[in-house]
Image (cartoon, rainbow over all chains, first blue to last red; front, side):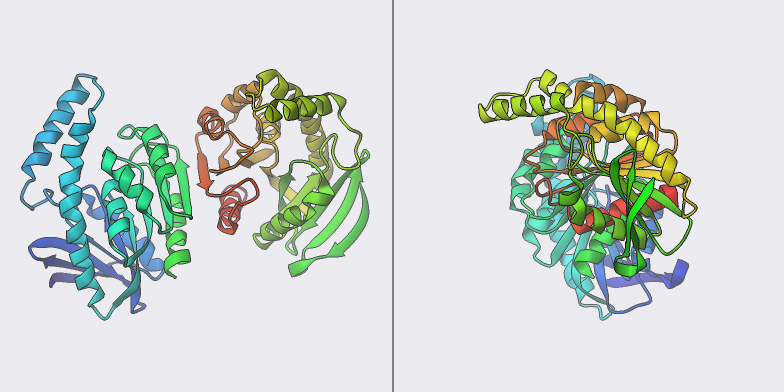
Length: 241
Length: 241
């Protein structure tokens, strides 16, 4: 892990850009140290996502949490994922024709991303937990729900997850969901134009966790109300605090 | 409104029993005065419900809210409602036979209660708001969702409601729901054995409010986690604060 830049943003939060095996990332740490860590997922494209990620990191820092994120496979300046690109083109054609999206397109679009992203997030976790200013426990927040779900199954250091019930959900994610045992906080935007509400409710039902909470709010994909973000922070404070 | 007893309970909260036109009720007030008011709904039977109601009132008082509740029509020491009693017997027979519950039984069970309870709650509100230690705005919390929904439509002094998505829902409640415009916080116990989850989700969808939030948690009817109660308090703090 090589830090490439450092600056202070609001409220004494220290923001550092890094690269790890060629993957760009950002680490935000609060004034209190060592801090529990929240891994921030996102849909890909760190530059475009920066304002929302930094806002989530500042809000988490106010609760005493460090936050970190890395670029997704195939996004930003990283090499494209040709299989996912072809699946995305097929998805656009299918949606453009007003046809239902077949599972095999969703599988081709999402599963290669899950298979590559999850080991990368775990490697980032190795490097982050080696820093003296970061300690466990670790939470995972947002991003593709297929990635967060797989991570919750395979990574024992992640002890709580706040998942965003959006995007297309592969059938394999339902199998993963049944194996999840950590506390979950699931956000659902009720009128999300990019989201099948029934699939989101079915996936929430499938999670094996004894503690799982669904928070559904009005509005579209990017319209999560500010109070919902605060409730996610309190979820982490309960489980990582 | 005649106060019949008074005592201090935890944290300086003052608890007073009262009767209003023969209907028993309880008022809890915090040390800060005048306080915004939360009307506490419940399924009926003040004596049996007292521990849970007092816990909700103490939690609300910690946020600066007064709370009040009255006995339901046909419950506790109040005269029975013969139509509802007959409907309840029919409901038991239907459930015992493992048959689906027809809408007409739900209508006979719930609608007379709504028609009588809502004017009684409004009359209690008149009397409570005349007390110097109570001020607006007013919230409504819990109880039969059919009662809370009707109240949210007809009572302009209620400016936010936290509803419990349980019990049987008459068809008329869906018509009421579409007319509701105040902010709503809806609690759903995902595995509630007395609750049809799909009906609860459909009713949440039907509410006309621009701000409505669904919080679904694991467990049965009486298993609402403590953190969910705190979230409801914060909902009221946002809207009545």
